[in-house]
Amino acid sequence: MSIRNYYRGFTLIELLVVIAIIGVLVGLLLPAVQQAREAARRLTCTNNLKQTGLAMHTFYDANRHLPSGYISPGVSATDSSTSETSKGYAWGFFLLPYQEQVALFDSIDQALEPVGTINETRAAEANLGGSLCPTDTAPESFPVDNGSGTVTLPTSNYVAILGWNNVTTQAGQGNGVFFRNSEIEFKDISDGLSTTICVGERKHIHDFFDQGPYAANSTWYAAVPGVRRDAGMAMMPMMKEGPGALVLGHVGQSGMMVGKTPNHTNHIVHFSSSHNGGVVFLLCDGSTHFVLDDIEYPLFKALGTRAGGEVASL
Image (tube, rainbow, N blue to C red; front, side, top):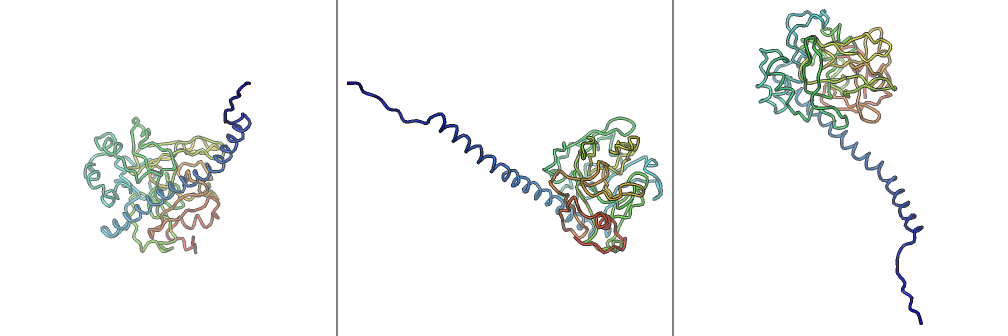
């Protein structure tokens, strides 16, 4: 009489079925997990801009005007950025004392140039987490050529609004809230604080429409004189952008950029983000809004100017 031993287990078919079910579940859950993570990253980005808005208003209370887009002594409002020869400390730098960064602000000697001195090292090594959007993969600092050599600047994913003008040739003539040597007061923003852009996002690489990549790196620190970067215009490869493009953005300019909303151009002075579907903006009243990529251009342009007389709302 033989004794047979029976062992419990899964057949190969059963194992394959289980693996297939697990694969389907993972496939269903993974997008939801990714969406949740991106929602958290976008919330952090939005909070970064809310904190910037709070610092802006605190600066305003102390100085009775908004910080300059950037400071460049010895130039007139109508001068091109090619006339800039010194300084360039920007709006983000002047907000440092109002963002609990007094020590960093005090460590940078404004009597010295922002680059080529100890100031450059101190700024480049500063780790300001609130200046970076977690959805973007931007490094904490980046190199740029200022005509005399390569300098290193701290990265920011946020730039202030020049308005509807050329950031390089009309850097001192912005019809937005920030431009070279500006000191805008709230009374100057006749379109309304709640309908005027203050600061918006910019990703560090522009690679839309299978073109590029173009380096669109921005900084909170300074519009360094002498900088000339590829503008990101495939049809105009010789076009360059100057120092202002490091710290300012626009909603278009005469002769070009008409009808271009966020994430729809590689031009490095435009607003952009790594978020799906839009860009986070801070308005002058301190509120934040997620502006969709497909916003109507006339509305987007109206939001970018301080006294255009348009009726705009989000």
